[in-house]
Image (tube, rainbow, N blue to C red):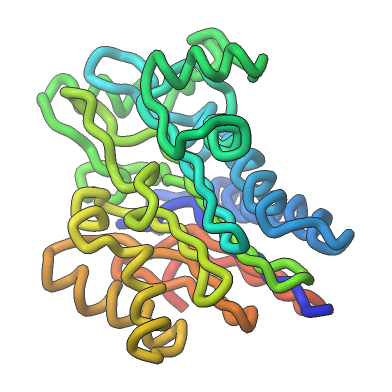
Length: 310
């Protein structure tokens, strides 16, 4: 029996320490800790990596501090359009959803698509119809109305700008969420969820629901969950590229993550980060921004929680 490992993220970007109160920073750290502990309880009972990452992401989706689920940002039309994906490194099965509204936990829908349909990716009204068939939980608009998100939306709409979570024009940090894990059976899994960009238009979809771009898992190599400027992560096929560098070039997880995040993405102009775990249970949390909300834990080790660069 192998030892488990788990990591979560709540977004990467420009994080203004001078604007974050000690209480708010403590809230973020507690939320990350809760996600880790909820997933650890599953892994410690010999549960699957897939179950652990879904549970961790679901915990973060229910927390309004993060740009996913309840805390999702507003689109130009004043709606909440959410994306999510999940992948099982043991079977290479995956599920993804984009552009859904009023679904409490998009990550549950993503897993349901993987396990209860012949498809990988559903979007919009079709995904919502599928969720209703499975009796998944829908919430009214009021559930997603978080005051600080609404203030951000009004400012963005007034200036006709699209605000990325990590952009300097935002004085508050809201983040895409994700998790990666290896269970005691050596299986890997990854999951990611987001509310997108504030004031986004034209049905924009980022990297989060795209298998290989924002999420990827393969028992032979690694599991990866990304966060940042999605357009660049799509163009660089970041999550799968990490796996490829390990499989075909023989790089270590650390070497692969640093090459993609600190070299390839930067050359493209992309900002962001990722969390990853490999087949041996090594964990990496790599980012090229000022900070990334992150936490990790290996079996029999203490929890690590970080926001700024160490």
